[in-house]
Image 1 (cartoon, rainbow, N blue to C red):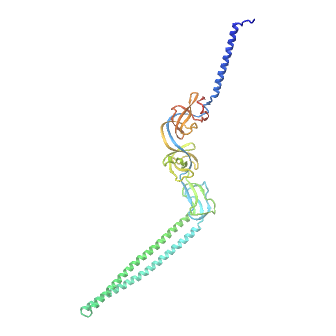
Image 2 (cartoon, rainbow, N blue to C red):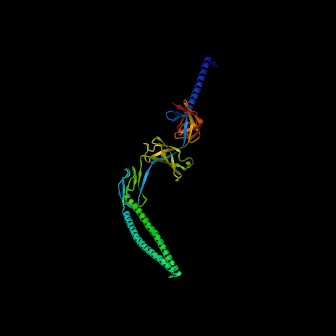
Length: 415
């Protein structure tokens, strides 16, 4: 027959079983907590970018690209059809006024000078011949006037004689009337002669004036051609740098073709391009900030070119300091066109944590945790976003991209 177990033994075994069960529970709980800890990601504060929400102004900007170009560039064109005889300067040469660039063939121009000089000499000869002809005609007309004057005096004397004879009945009344008519005819002839002389003088003056005008026009053409001779030696008329030149000796050039470009590299402006989708927001006079070699330069839109090519608008920007040391010809720059300014608003530094304006999922750091929160973002400036709602001044926000953590409510932060 079995003997009952000792109560002390039974109590001891029960206590061991309870301890075992407790150990199992502890192990299970610890494992669960460890797994949870392993599933909650940790970010090192040194590996992420953060910023504190503050208050200030934000400028709404349109970001575009630009290029630094000389504020003034001189283009020298070919003054006449010619060919290049000799190239006397190379691109990159520092120029001063009067510096020789090219020598052009001027033989055709010299032929034009000879032709114009011959035409002027011919017109001069025609004027001398005309003056001789005028003098001859005037001599004839004046001689005729003198003759008519004498004939008129003679007829006046004859009329007086006939009237005297009529008084002693030695002449008839008809003879008196005839003498008076002859006298009137002589007067009319003399008056006609004077009118002809006046018309001749006026006509000859116009002929002489016409020849004078023709000679003056020819002389003007001659001076222009002589000036072209001087321009056969192409020279710089400004201080600057030769950026391009037609360098092929013997090349044939047409009038108006570009021979050289000279740039003043002491003052610059910006040529920027922007999509035509922003055309309604862009206007002449808008303030602009230009980032050149990590330095911000102020300026404004001076002109908007009327032509749109491939959906791109070209802007001409004048700088407040066009001679800044950071400016170099053809340097690529970032251009920020300021379309709106808002003062005394909440703002935070820009970063990849924002995807445009509107509601965003952001992480705000609180002690050792980063808690996901909804925030509303307004306008975007050069380096700041406007915060409309969801964040408070003084809170710290993670700026780094957090797309991989947007399914989590909390991230552990390791300081």
